[in-house]
Amino acid sequence: MPQRWGITVPLTGLPLWEQRELIRALPDLGYTDVWSAEAAGTDAFTPLALAAEWAPALRLGTAIVPAFTRGPALLAQTAATLAGLAPGRFALGIGTSSNVVVESWNGIPFTEPYARVRDLLDFLRQAFTGEKVTGEWPSFAVRGFRLDIPPEHTPPVLVAALRPGMLRLAGRDGDGAIVNWLTSDDVRAVAPHVREYGKPDAEIVARIFVLPDVPADEARAIGRRALAAYLNVPVYRAFHEWLGRMELTPMWTAWAAGDRRAALEAIPDAVVDRLVLHGPAESVREQVQAYVEAGVTTPVLAPLAGEPGALIRALAARP
Image (tube, rainbow, N blue to C red):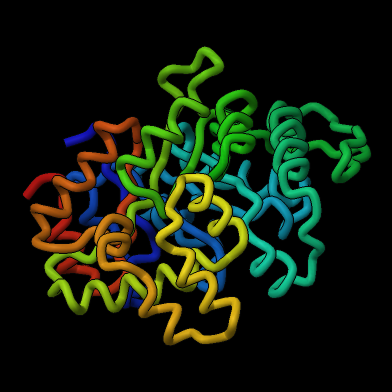
């Protein structure tokens, strides 16, 4: 098994406040990491704050926090707080998110996303030192901000990245990249862009969508709905076009025409099978290992359905 074995929190199918015993069990099952997300469910930080208390051995990470939805100072404060709760065990993952989350849901203009992430990286580096920060960046300005409690252990900052520009930013200015909705073969196209700046060991975190022990027809139905929801978002469509996955063109065409049923039916089984890992749990673990062999350093399992206790046991790195 890889050195790191992560899972997405909160676990699926159970309220966050009822997950304490399951989170506590993760280290004994071989899990090393828990990584949160932030879209329309919980925020990214609260589940990690609880995990820091419930299972102090776990490494914690955000995958990801949108770069637009918190001001630079507030993001620095929140990250520094969590870094203080879990010294040396917290990684901050930031990214553009999407026009849906940023603009449609939060009413914030989704403009110049690359610049926003680039500028935020630079600001956070300065803020985490505890020195006063005053500066004007292309996407925002900060005047006279200082963290009252800077982190004793500066957290690594990773960048959610899809195409070459952001992947290179992740490797050049960040501490690594966070990727998702890609196959193990796609990792071989992505990883060199991150590591071309003299960082051959730069961290690459991959959220890998899984449905262990689910019948194939059911898994494909669940997977199709998830794929349609994500891959019709412009940033993900552009990513898969760059990867050459043009067999998704009929889905994009139907979705743009407003025919959701036809869009779902147009997704080939082969695409679902490669982007949503299913089958017996042992087979799913082997498929995840292929991502590691392709260059992922931190696989983070993201179950799309299932009873959480059974899921964490089935996917455990060790019995």
